[in-house]
Length: 185
Image (cartoon, rainbow, N blue to C red):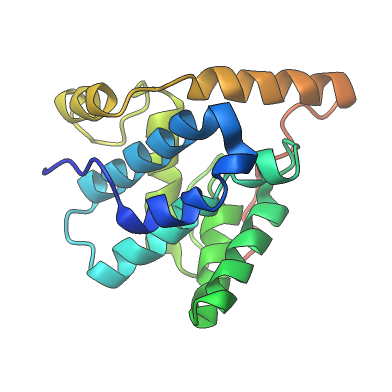
């Protein structure tokens, strides 16, 4: 697998959020880039269009952590994505990317509409979130190389900060972004 250190489309999208993400920018950008590398490792046969869809979804998948300052971020994240798609003449992708973003924290396998890319994205995000403890068949050497080239830069610390804020706001719903069932079947 050839590792990709930057995805220009991701950098273009995230550049528009740099002032909102602030000191967490490098961590989020690297998280997005790592998970895209894991998507390509899981499916080396992705088409250019599939890769572009995943890049757009990845840039937006957690964005509302910062734009809305909340852990219950899935809906506002895909709404931000849908606005970008509309502004860039790609509105026909909105439903598929909504599913990809909305189901990326599903605790079980996703089997609904657009399952191929949604499940690939879910797995890649989990590989990165777990820091490679969950591998979904990606070799440890690939994970290590990606992590070395694209350092964490405090991303997991940022997630802990947001989780702590959520616990203080609502201790009985500490992880509202988790999905326990597929709502698109």
